[in-house]
Length: 352
Image 1 (cartoon, rainbow, N blue to C red):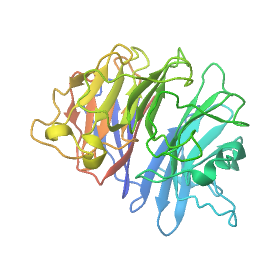
Image 2 (cartoon, rainbow, N blue to C red):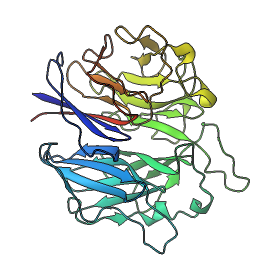
Image 3 (cartoon, rainbow, N blue to C red):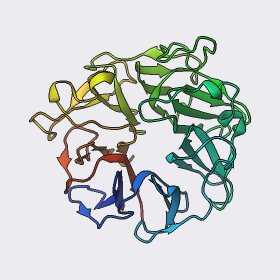
Image 4 (cartoon, one colour):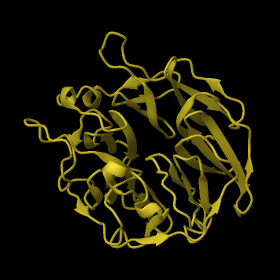
């Protein structure tokens, strides 16, 4: 069993490999040097995808069988040239047996039914009647999270900053805003279903109605598929943060709180991951092996991952270029080799 840790940065991607024990890691030569590497995915047949972006050349998709040799996909997701929207970055990639998805900035969702050869938009979301009033968050107007109901594949949730969570019951033909119980961040005087800034979102694969959400305004839980949300912040040092991941075996949740949207750094320089082992009812810091000296680097929304082995591994990358790994569900941590550029994306892949 091999574990591959894919780390996307402002200036390329860096790959770490280990065995199932995850005690020793080897670091490979960087790929996509000079490009922002913003997302990755692994298809059911083992093929890897990676998304890059450039201020000069725009966004691109690449594919590989071994994560070493890559070739660019000729026709990635794109808006019409005369349509008024520009695709600047691919924020998220999701792959299933019959369909691949890409969430992008300017906010929109695309899918491919032919393994990435062609892509089509979801007009009901991308051109929603409210879309003219959508407002970007600090990181842009980005569709950065897509959840697919494992029991009902036509049921989708899409997180857009700073718009909110949208749900489709019909494979993307129609969408409804699902933010009841979450405070609005940027209020529109006329349209009340937008202005919610979701940062991260995960789903219990065994109970798809159970959703968890790190929002600009706090940490929230839904037990009805997003129809309503409640705060779950007991034990957290702050409400603000970006990433959120889940250990599917134990249902433990992991987040990285930051000291408010003004500062966006660990409170008091104390670099700690927080874990909930009771569905968000309470949270505890886990930090054995994490830095004891003050750290003021942040962790971005795409820079935390879980590998879903037993016990689950948790991985965190920082804006200062450090990567930390735990092979025991967050109980203990170690720093991986190297100091990288600003880390945007971390993903963990297992198997051969």
